[in-house]
Length: 461
Image (cartoon, rainbow, N blue to C red; front, side):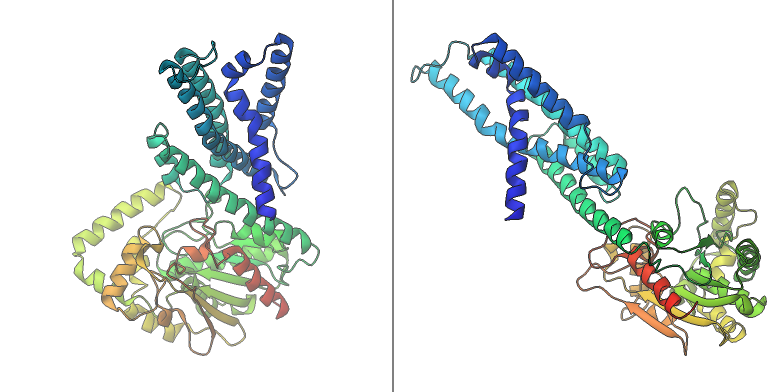
């Protein structure tokens, strides 16, 4: 009933826009010039209000207000388009019947006026759609670029363009309600500061990435944790080096955070190879007394056997070429001495056997391992769908996230959690760090990390 009433309100709000779009016919229908001008004046004011007055009643932030405004404009445009069909059909049929001498039409109704009226309607409609799409582009993270590309290619195609507009609006509307609910949840629990752990949190990234803030490795996660009281810092190690070299950089950052905050210890949450870097710092570089907890996310503790297989098949000359190209690119991006090969070779199953013997996690450091399962190849973009297929070819029975198997992600004697979703979507290696900023049905990655810190807080960390 509530949805029906909202739909009815949407239709009623679109009626003045429809009338404005048919201003040429309206001008000839109304006889009194004063009434004409008054009606047109208020219709134009209403139209400009729809275009430029934002919605703030339902939104929790300026960004959500912009998104809500964009959704409303697209929705009004779609409704007006559908409502115009019978209006134009009636006008055209009346004109045809007049030509066929079946039924007389008003003297003012002719083909030239209908063309002018249609152009007026299309101009009004263009304002709604352009305004809606622009606001959606700047405020939505869930509408994929492919839909904007479809819109560029098919904006001139009747019906198809309407379907695309409707789909963009539908995705944006789901995002709006999801984000608004999250904002309301954070406001409700603001005082409790459920993520305010005793010790600050150090987020340690994996291989082939850096701690850029323009495009954060951890997506929307850090901001969500801070909203709930967390003190967040980053590992800041280079994108690809040996575990030993990365751990040394991490060791320096650990002590920099301790000095900055005055804390006795830190909580480490590490993704992928970052978990191995953290283990080396704890076991080999004397950081165990300064680490309260270590939470590894999709870390290949026992290596990636499929990587061993691929490295054996790639000629050494090709490996060196990749290493040189990688170094030249990431030195420009900020690394001082990146090494593709050092990073990859330390992820092999053969190296991991030696590493696990030399770098056990001390008992005084609380350690837990977490992992997700990717259900099908194309539930993640390249290169994860490619690596998923490689893993399935190597071991078809293995549960994996596209890069790491569940068997490799767990440590003997440590708490382990394998996250699964019902259905075929699954959660990839990148999904666990919000790499694509995607709201996945059944899995809220931001809330997942909130729950991790909530549990650490309850344990006194």
